[in-house]
Image (cartoon, rainbow, N blue to C red):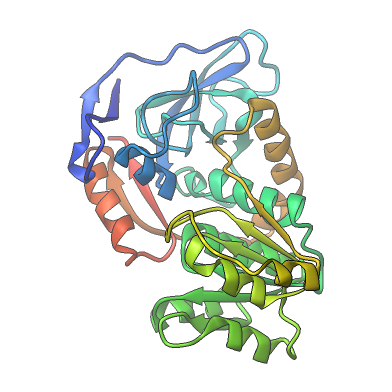
Length: 326
């Protein structure tokens, strides 16, 4: 089969389509013939040499995919050959076929195309586990999402609105902010021209927001704490601006704040299966009802993975970028 290989850590051109061995499935795994794989920021970090796959995972990039089950391990009971599915992966999505534990597989919603379904597993599992399972966002509370027009951001806006929250977002241009508004964001802030702390306070009667989902990291740490309400929760899922920051601990004391951070890829398969199960119970109905929709910006052939990475790094996209094996 063909897969995108990282030939050396570096720029997008190190991604090369090569002939590789097919993965062999274990007893609790299924083999998926890939219809589409979606890009995530973690793929770029892996390509650059900063985010290696967990031990035993595929060395090829790709953290989510959709496709058709081609074979199943002897301990797999829920899935059968021919099922249309999407899956949360530890790696290996940039390929014709990928092996994945059966507990990380989801059915393709009947109102979503097989290729578009690739845009859901990683973002749905990330947002549900961080914003809802760990930060406990409740109906009537407020959520601030940094990077509102990213794949994560677009999904988070839709599911938070579905669950009855008020949603604030930041983005870097008016086109992105307009898109966020169109899909349900209540307050849209241009971080290049406005101070988001000031705007959050203005729009919340001086209280701040209850939960923040942050992909920026160090540069926003103190501003995020300043933007939170009493008993607010900050969840960090990325560090685009770096890992080291200075903060005023007094802010945490005064407002009883919680700061958490997590990566999905490094969790155990048991933890991933639990998250996937929660996503199917809580998120899939929102997709099936049309309240949460896939937003795909562009598709590339698998052999053009380097070009797809360049697009993601340019931040010109709104929504997800897909790779399609041909």
